[in-house]
Length: 173
Image (cartoon, rainbow, N blue to C red; front, side, top):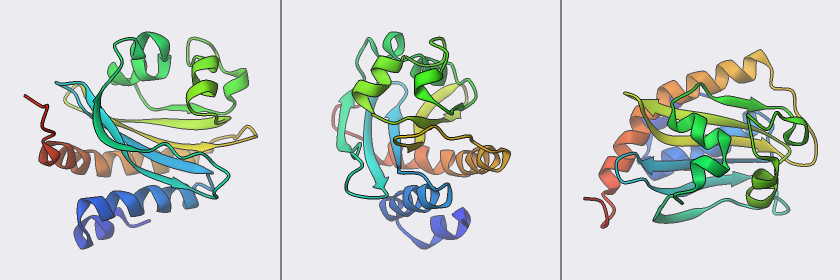
């Protein structure tokens, strides 16, 4: 996957649409979405989601909305992302440590069985979460998968920040 080529050849909407599809396919996932947020206002949206087939539920909302005040307390992975901890690789939601994820929260909100919670962070702030995932079965994330995610996040975080800042939702200060 040549991110630099995608970034320079298309507008940002097309870039991120292609990115989540290409990443989902290259990692052989069932779904891949990108959550973007403005760290100062805590407004977020999920404007980019790819699914392998129509049986997989999409996670998509193009409108900027306030993050629920309880999100960090309900979702340990989001709390880790807010702390700008390293990305989280969950091989089996059903067997994961409760300190890592809230199984009930994941099942109710996302339905996946294995996932990567990729943190887009810069200067101590969370700007987004990239989330490739698998349904119906566990998944061992290889060293190559982990390198791919680290490289993709490093390359797209500045572009995500440009996208977020350019969007200037009406309710941003």
